[in-house]
Figure 1 (cartoon, one colour):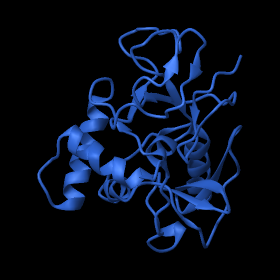
Figure 2 (cartoon, one colour):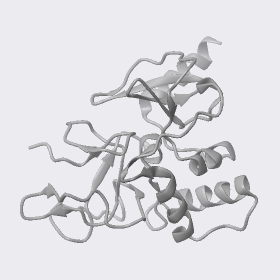
Figure 3 (spheres, one colour):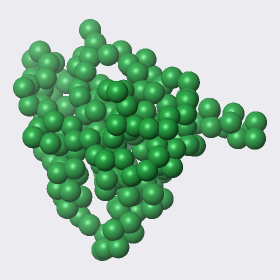
Figure 4 (cartoon, one colour):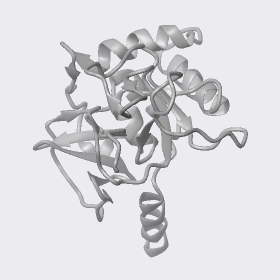
Length: 214
């Protein structure tokens, strides 16, 4: 049975057979007896992005009450949904994210809780995904930023747009306009300041092929 635990760039949690590179959580939002989601979609402002492997520990998905395992196609999708790197299992990434966040804002490096508070305001609008105004052309966005166009999400990398689908990313294309930005503005600033998210191999291979042809 396909569990309802895959996260879209719009932050929705859906039941699709897509394999995710990253896992993460928003607290406990499931019933372990039925392995189904509760009505709420978060129980904490700490929305995390975790590694699928940590110290050789194996977890049975949705089996306990510690946290609800969610999955993302790659880190760009997780960031767009409003998550941030975990300081436990992805400490190096979390430190790099926090440093880029601080550099972009010209402030002292914030606590995890302070970043979570900002992200919570930026990712939600009355309980629904907040779509932000797009600061310029999609092609000018840093790698890993995600935009929305006609209800579809596109991850930007190398100036090209990769459409997110339930099956994975499609062949890249160029888009000149978008309806808005899914990646929270503070996260976008961190990307501009040098944070490099883990992108799906389909994007990495496509970019390598593009570079080889240039």
